[in-house]
Image (tube, rainbow, N blue to C red; front, side, top):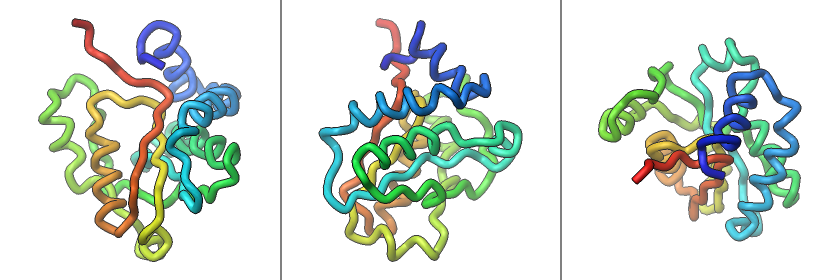
Length: 162
């Protein structure tokens, strides 16, 4: 969905409104939208949340969505496949270039997962895509460990008014 109006409201309720009761319904919606991307032996994972935000929120909204996607297709779900190496500042109010710079070196994969992804397709799930900087950093990390192809599914996509 587009990240404005009702789409924004739903994403924000899940992300900041402690409305985890919405996750099953929104996750099923993401699963239906992601159907053309699904491949045999695919791994489903989520964009990781910085530790400070995870502690404050108590959950990773992208993991809640990715769990539903994996369940819908009987795929392996690894919510902790990727991790944040640092608590990067929020992306809001940054330029496109600054958003990508902010994500440089911010995503890593624990060594125990490296063999798991090698040569396997991965579906990366997030709640909102704005610039794509965070998703690009995650995809770069996955590709660097030999995963592929890498597909992305998001609940909402920010768009500029023209």
